[in-house]
Length: 154
Image 1: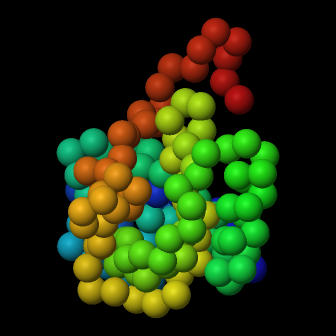
Image 2: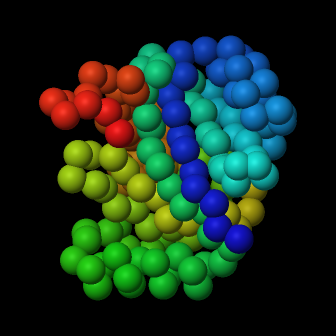
């Protein structure tokens, strides 16, 4: 099973947890310092929130897959279609060990294609990984609710 991932920056973790738990009628699957995530069945969504000063902004998007083979196939397809990826990495990010690749859209929105292979006690993203991992410091926030360009919304 694959599902979309939405990672948001929030200014107050406790308020974010309370709001999103009510919105999706489920409690977080994981809560750590400055971090929480939900594994929502309906709609199928991996929701992640990061506490930081840029509340109300998009951190990144993603596709969570069931296997490393799916990540490798996606990375090959993306690269074959001419998109610049980070390549395949076995890494620790967001309190999880993962096999992942990243790609950035033309407007700067970052997409992570990954499979979680285990739980970790640290956020990860130290050293060179800081530019790729999904910590608030690694991401240029994308403001949600910004006024759409001429032509309206949607």
